[in-house]
Length: 226
Length: 226
Image (cartoon, rainbow over all chains, first blue to last red; front, side, top):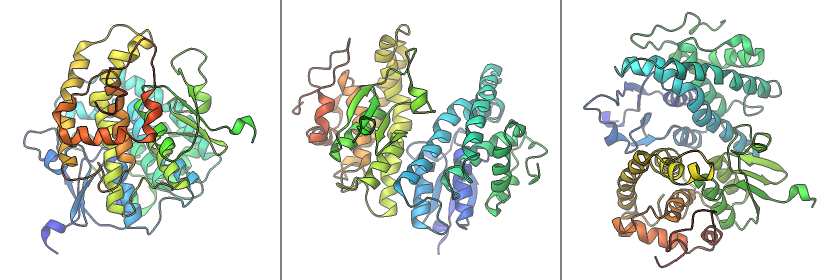
């Protein structure tokens, strides 16, 4: 195996899209080298790796793969053990609906405004946080938690009876917020229990040691009993 | 069959996400009743049909389905004839990467700014168009067309050798812009040929008769030889 084929993930630590891929890789026991991709800095080669200019980019099986949802679906098809998608079309739809819920709606209303203002503006040296955006994200997260709590009162996992891509997508977003302490886990016991269960999986370990310079994680971030 | 099980698509005519589902339904020869969902008006019941508050929503097989990409993947799995996804994981990834290219990047940079400013603000009575956003969309569309043209010089269809969900996703976005005459088809012969081919499919017919009150389609919109 030459060095060009070493599996590698170009990522940044607090991106929910990168975390989603990291969690699925770890769950499938695929070891990758993590390389920080500071795509906003001059000289970044992101466009050579992905014409869409987005992270994560995965180097695996002799190719570069982009788009987080397309990557995790590929991983589930090419590395089917353990399976992270149900077999029946209707159940598969529900998993994909929830992945999109987080990657589109939750990201637009919660993850992106909060992380952009609290983290990325500082990291990228792009001005002061807009507190209205942070507040709007913190208001929106409550409705989302109520909806997720409601789902989890009737289901063992978010998408149904098995652990799926939907759980890892949700956990990827929530773990970014949890790092900067913006999740009120007391709001829903069902959601808290679900998060405690997924957080204790071996796949979660390498997320829990993330350290973003300038941002110490919340004290409970790495605790399994939070 | 009672009336509750009549297949129905809640949609609006110039939404690329709704058009994507319409094209796939038609390609699979699944007849649905189209119901306009004016989700921005008081009294809209969109939240009862989809807690994410988004269109399209499809009523089919006794259930409501939401999220356009999750819907078309469901349709391809539950109604596999004709297949609109390749069989191999790497090729499936490429189709999903391109679907996300359009539904995320192309939509953010092109479809949404242009349609929001030129169409939705008028339809929703939400103020005057911001010409800077329109111009930014018109600038961005050029790079996208070059990229698509480049892909199509090496491939018969966008995702590879077969017609897939990627072609219908791309056509859904481009057809909305074409309706209001914002596609410079002279920019890429390969892209123009591809669009002429997909536009002449029977599945495209019911898009070509769309009429949005207050917005007459561009003269060439319904012409197969444009």
